[in-house]
Length: 88
Image (tube, rainbow, N blue to C red; front, side, top):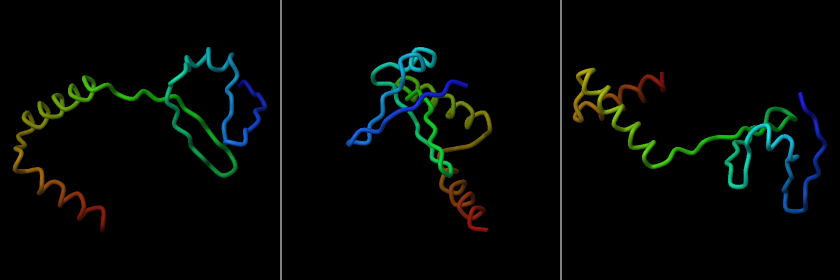
């Protein structure tokens, strides 16, 4: 595991070492999720889906729902049932 010591700027910014950025393919504009656990901070690169990725996922979900026999009119009942189960 690579370990480096970073400084936090007055604006709360840190600079990730070039070697780590290269190893993890982190370029300018890369989105990172930040997690805090106890006294640890973890950063994880994430991919934000493109509009076409999102539309493809919607199409896949619609195909699955059709195959499962769901209709658009079933959505409200499914949501109500899920919310009720979460309250229990």
